[in-house]
Image (tube, rainbow, N blue to C red):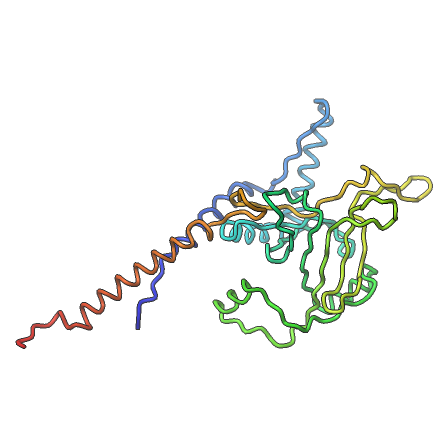
Length: 292
């Protein structure tokens, strides 16, 4: 029968940031503005305007989940301090993709001191796929073989806490495959220099599913062959959204770090005050006059 009232300081802070950020990022339908970097010329300025309009159409019209994903990102960012997006061209779906990636799904060597995301040579994303979706990837020759269903049932502490708070009990048989997509550098051609590649493996069987270059290539107009451009400079797929820079590490600081303990203390004081008043009024019968 004890008090369980709470004051949502943490939720209110995250909601206030989310509301202001969404208004700033999405003032209208045109969310991308291209800036010409060459000489000032009316034709180049008009081209930059058309590029911005086309990219805005890609994000706001063709990609129906872009705004909704940013909505989720801007609500989780102030809580955790860091959030990621993955931007790439999906060869199976045939369009550009901008996907949210939770901090616990992107494994990054923490290292010593703060670093930018493009300075980290090895990044591994944990991807959960349905078995049927994996079969589509194999049929499209995106994977060389089917990944096996992940049977260990491993969940992170964050996911366990979320399931407990929502009253969710995960099924014993998930029917999902766990794929590890690692962005790193390997010397596959034996020239003594490591080049950027993307290696995808099945977590259950530990078998290789795909190897893809992570640098730009251009097709020769006459011969039909491809040649490497920009000296095999790695393409960065991930964007790090940081709420407050952490002077001692890679991941940012969020409201959970800043006012989380304060919110717990406020809730405890409120509950103690209500319980003390309840005991004083009811438990000790102080509202009645006794002749004893």
